[in-house]
Length: 115
Image (cartoon, rainbow, N blue to C red; front, side, top):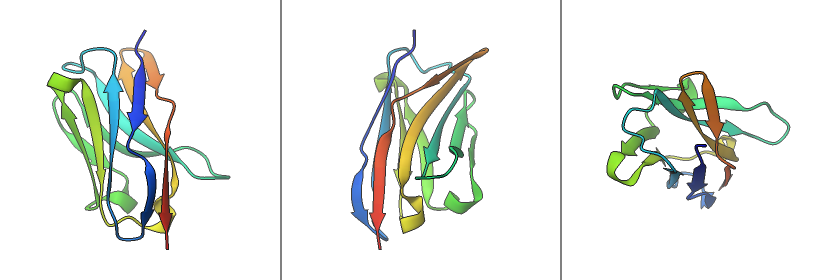
């Protein structure tokens, strides 16, 4: 069973930065797809960023140029560096892994951006 534990959320002023971490209970060296999603109050969960096993990355349009997904294989950890944060980035952020046909989620970490 794969366990994912997010951390790094918090309250930040608009324009500020946060780095989210997702620590995995397994080696991430060859994970098919690793990503981040978010869910704002009253809204559906939405995709934010993805990194595939080859290292390619993709981002949702509203975060391009501001967010960066990265990995540290030695620490089995995936990161989401978030810069130039905006109030509309306020949400619970979830780490997600896809391994074959299986999908794994973390418990989420709250990010609140004040105006």
